[in-house]
Amino acid sequence: MSKTAHIDWRLCACLCLGLGSGLAVPSLAVAQPQVTVSISDAEGPKQVVPLIKVLLALTVLTLAPAILISMTSFTRIVIVFSFVRQALGTQTVPPMQIIMSLSLLLTAVVMAPVAKELDEQVFTPYVNEQIGDEEALALTGDAVRRFILPHTRESDLGLFYELTKTEAPATVDEVALHLLIPAFMISELRTGFEMGFLVFLPFVLIDMIVAAMLTAMGMVMLPPTMMSIPLKLLLFVVVDGWSLLARSVVGSFQ
Image 1 (cartoon, rainbow, N blue to C red):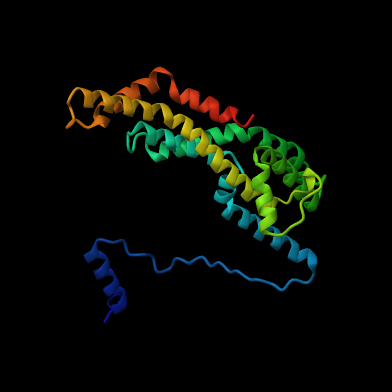
Image 2 (image 1 turned 135 degrees about the vertical axis):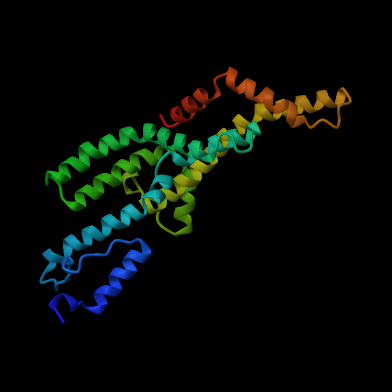
């Protein structure tokens, strides 16, 4: 038998399966790349500190949505816009994705001065190694405190100091962030509900007027919402409601 007749039966089986399934047969001589990951023991604090920084950075990225909700103007804005959609009675119009996107954009507008301050006083000096880790964290906390504290009610802040049985701070700089942030959220919820009530009130009046008119005309079987929704939409468009809302919400933080 010739040399060409000595064909490995395994190679024939691979060729048959590849042709039968319509798949390309991989080359048998291609070398596969290998990736090796190794972890060495730390020999001192200098090798441990970078790993801790990476862990803290990943933790901050994981908590970014919570930070966005709890330490910015997002809570108040999204509550007001949600009340507007409910007051209009249009159910799912505008969609919640639109409301969230608009709330994020307005949050960026409100938080732009704070972000600029952090970039100039914290991020740039830290990258240029002009300040250390502790000083950068302290400056970041001061910037956040200066934004949050004016929009936090004193009674809400006192509530958390009372719950934790912590002594009240003597100065503004001594206010603890872990107590200030939840107090700020409660204050934002109350402010958002107050603004939502003021926005809701004229639409409720339209519903009452339409219902009274239909009852007086004897059209009891006609749902009042069928007549009130077009009137509310017309009123909202005529007064340029979205522009007024954006102006009012952003202006409430200035």
